[in-house]
Amino acid sequence: MKKYLWLSAAAAAVIIGYVSFSGSGSEGAVGKSAGSYRTEAISRGDIRNTVSATGTLAAVDDVVVGAQLSGQITEVHVDFNDSVAAGQLLALIDPRTFAAQVAQAQALLDKTSADIELQKIAIKQAQVNYEQAVRNLRRVEGLVAANHISEDELDSYQTAVEVQQLAWQQAKAQLNILHATEASNAASLEQATIELERTEIRSPIDGFVIDRTIEAGQTVASSYNTPELFTLARDLSEMEIEAYIDESDIGRVMLEQRVAFNVDAFPDREFRGEVSQIQKAPQSDSGVVSYTVVINAKNRNGMLLPGMTANLEIAIDSLPNVQRVPNAALRAAQRFGDANDSEKRRGPMSMLEQLNLSNEQREILRERLPKPGSGFGRGVAQQQRQRMEQVLDEVLTPQQQELRAKLRNGQLRVGHLLVVRGGGVEKIEVKLGISDDSHTAVLEPDLTGEQVVTQIRATKS
Image 1 (cartoon, rainbow, N blue to C red):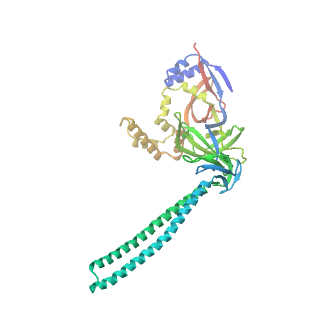
Image 2: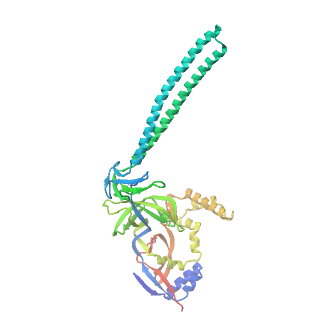
Image 3: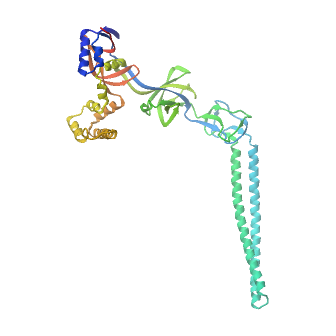
């Protein structure tokens, strides 16, 4: 219910009297002139504090299947919406080049294996030659004692033994080299086999095809990045939305908050979800910083499809069937407030006044907090605030702690309203709750049936 009333002399006197009491100069000038004000009745209803954003729907368990090789697609075995099983062949890249590489690697491995067998024979032969040289040396050493051969001939036999021993050692070393070559060729064969297997593009999961980007005969190149061939999803019974939340709102978004959204395909249908992840990595676009918030949503009837744009509202706070006033009423009352009042209520002493501290708690604060004027500068003020927070954590009751938390996060604050009473306008103090775009909750006192001033227009007399 809305109505317009002309300010009576009594109403003007009430406003002028309050302004004079509060010490405001600017409002006093308005109050001394004749004027009119607009009123609206206190109402009851729901208040929902939300954050609006847009996002894109996607399947929760989707997998992009790509090609790790370059080549021509010779076969494509699945199409859009086809069901697939893990390991099922989806497409084939021309395997002839890779099959030739496998054959070449296999041939090299076979050659090395044959070389190893030959080298084993060479080692055996070197061993036989060495042993023969040793026997010859022993016979010659007996002839030297009888002076049947010279020392020079003995030296030649000793040299022959050493040469055959070195040949034997060299043959064994050569065998080790061939074993290393065999291992290298075996690794090359394994790599070539893997490359050949990669020509078969197979499904990594059970699901269905939601996207296909290739056709038979198309050439894919994976030199710099992996070509994306298919997008598979396990199912669409659950979807997720990636929404970008502005940095000014991200502080109010919490995990498990409820989300309502709709899509352009079904504008009259409201879907539900909840916040499942808040990514801390910032996204900057033209100087605007935002953060990615992931929202999970059920899709049992399959109406939601990947890629749809979701217009969503994240429910920050809500109060059902609460006493509320138009936000304009708070602005109207603020115009006639003390110029210093808002500054006082933003300071640390404002919270102390609203916590209803006992005498004992006040005494503890006086004893533990630094005395006024004990220091100057931003650092000193910050230390004093931190000290006050520590002391409050120790002395406040659980109920006071809860009240302090509400005061901090905006769920509770103190404000004023101009109420029409007895033919005049009276300014009263109220405890306010959350706000939405049009209304603010009034927690205390009970103003059922009251009329509040929402607009004042001063006129010259």
